[in-house]
Amino acid sequence: MTEDLALDPALDDAALAAALVRNAGSLALRMRTEGLSAERKTSVSDIVTAADKAAEAYVVEQLARCRPEDGVFGEEGASVPTSSGRTWVIDPVDGTFNFFSGSRYWCSAIALRGDAPTTEADPDVVLGAIFQPQEDKLWVGGTDVPATLNGEPLAGPADAPLALLGTATSIQPRWLEQPLSAMPWHNAAIKAASIRILGSGSCDLARVAQGEIGAWFQHSCPQWDWLPGKAILGAAGGTTGTVVVNGLTWFAAGGPTAVGEILAALAEVQFA
Image (cartoon, rainbow, N blue to C red):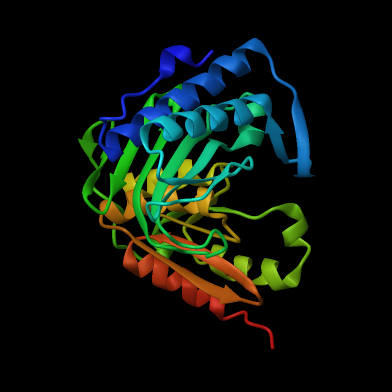
């Protein structure tokens, strides 16, 4: 199925990342069209499909060809040690519940980071790429790569107060049952002009980078949900930050004013 998707090792990192997410997302969409079943991971909404696994396997295979000295760290279990000091972080299908339900709001995402432990919450990131197949939208950006959407420059998020911004977020029902997470989340959410829970963190972060969504926050993000969007947002001139509240690491993104307000609001509900 993937023989015709082999990539040229001579591609630079940004072009390689863009091709990987475009091909992985297109592969997943084709498999969904042909029919899929899903396996439950940790909850009814946390699932994995054959498309997730096939898309990740494709990316791992191409990286082994094109960047054999780089490491790989993937949501569906890919783990390749690095000998170059660089690691590609893969989310083959971000928003799998949306994907399996027939929604268009899902994507394939990848990031390139330096040699940081896989357990580190918020490592530095060099490059990110996000592709939303059913919208044909490809975001790319990084420290040495301008932030773009389908090749056009991104304006970046507006620096405005949180009270004037539509804000994307995510919190699962089981976390809403826990005051340690629910109360900080509520304290930040009520300060926004509106709240959106759309089901794909990378799609959300890409839209913050282009100014379509005003800001974003969530707790306990794995690297594959955070780093692709963080790289693009940083390249677009946006701000990101984290704060630990009641043992949970919260992540925020947007303009500097909104991010500062979100992190402060979360930190106000710190239990002893």
